[in-house]
Image (cartoon, rainbow over all chains, first blue to last red; front, side):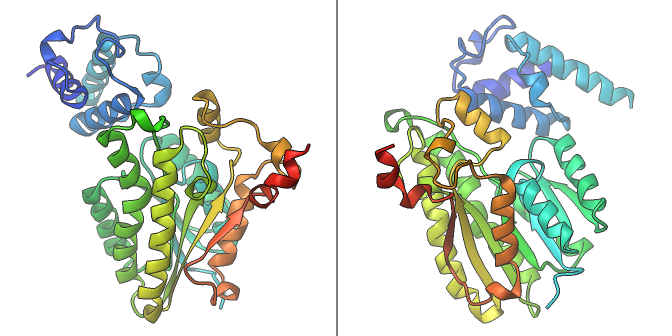
Length: 81
Length: 255
């Protein structure tokens, strides 16, 4: 399972939307994710991948793709270490 | 009895009121366990500030809304220190919504972090305080008894916290554990800036008889007092720190 699939599963479970509608271009608004959903998604992703995502970074995410790209880069960094 | 060398856990002490409490207790020679949830850098900064006061600091990550994480945190404290003298139940979260928009998820998230965490942390802390006594102090807000816009869930969670404080105070009294709460009006912190942004609060310095908003240090001073032996006979109380706001409503209405 790719990082993208895992993050999509987490977001779909939290927002209770069908994961097939979540594309890299989807905004959090389109996924109907409110501020609590976003926090819960961040926490779940942090726990799944053993990373920490600062709020300053999270605030830059314009859409699901930005979120995935950030997690992918962090996971790659962790693997190097 | 000196507080020198005692050990305190302050939940949510990376910033704001929790940080001010950590520093105040540290200034009295108390070693501090800094709990944080999402902002490691802030917690590490608090740890450095605590250590610069000449006491030890330990940083532990835990979401106090998650019972497993609370257990892990106390397991670690038990293993590493074997005891605890002071628990400051400060960590809080909330979702600002009108009553009509409150869903189960927002309710549970807020209640778990703001109210249930006191129950679970107090249960575990009391075991670590066995044979030595202790102090448990929580942080509440005026929203527990006064209605603030879009503050329903947080206000209700704080009311539960204050009620729980009374029950804990009585049930833990035989173990020599003093349990109290400090309730503040809007305190100048990062969290308040968020509330301003979300339209949940506005600058209330004009409405405060004391002439300014409550600062984190104002709350920390009362928390430290409740942790002292001078406060031994105060049990199960919620002490309001609001510069007179809650008793001055009608006097201020004419201004």
